[in-house]
Length: 314
Image (cartoon, rainbow, N blue to C red; front, top):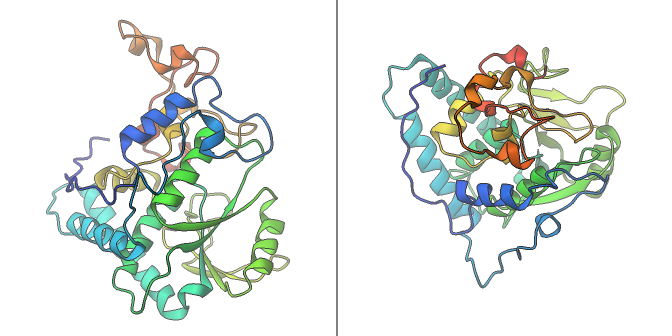
C-alpha cells in the first residue's frame, strides 16, 4: 500500500513524551532478553540498567496541556487536504471515533470512565483520540486518567517497558492485574466501584468483535460495566495510517514483525511479513542477526506493511 501520509507538525508534546529515539534505545536495552520468561510483569527498571527519569530531570506537561497539544495535532490531520483515499477514510474514522468519545463523556462523569490499556496499536489510537477529545471537556481534568492493564502470561519485556513509559507520558493511572480477563475486571471494578464504563480498543475483525456496537453492556456472567468501542470499525491498515500520520510512538515489537500483542507463549512474528532471503542479500547486519527480531534466523518486515485485516492473526 503506497499511502501518501500527510506530514504533521513535529513539536514535542512534552519533555517526557516518548519519541522514536527513546523506543529504539529501549529496544537495544532489551537485546538478548527481548521477552520476559516468567509470569511476573516487569517494568522498565527491571529490563535495563538505565535509571528511570526523575522529576528533577523532566517537568511533564499537565494533562490539560497535553490534551490541548494532542487536539491541535489531530485537528491539523483532519484539516490536511489530501487526494489519498486511504487518508480520507482515516479522517472519517477519526471524526466518528471522536463523536463516540464525546457521547461517552456526555453519558458518564470522568471518574466513572476508565480505559483498558495494554500498549497495543488499537488502544493507542483510542487513547490519543480520547486525550484530544478531553481538550474541550468542561470542568477540571484529574492529574491522571483511570486505566486498567490486564497482564498476559509471560509478558514481553518490550511491551512491559512501553506500557510503563507511555502510561507516564500520557498521564494514565494504571491498575495492573496478572489475572485472566474476567476475574481481572471483577477485581478492578471491586476496587474502583465508581467506574461504570470502560473504553476498549476492540475492532470488528478481532475475536468476538463482529457483532459489537459503540456501546455494549458486558455479557451475562461477566462483571457489569458498559464497554465503549470507539475504534470498532477501523481497519488494520487505517490504524497504522493514523499512527504514522500523527507520528505516534509505538511498541518496538511492531517493528519486529509482530502484528498483535500477547504473551511470549502465544505471540509470534506474523508469517505474512517474513522477509525473503533475496531481500536480505547484500544488506548490512541487522537487529535480527543480534538475536532480537528473528525466529530461527528468520527476519520480518514491520507491522505497518501489512494491509489485510484477515492476515493480522495468522
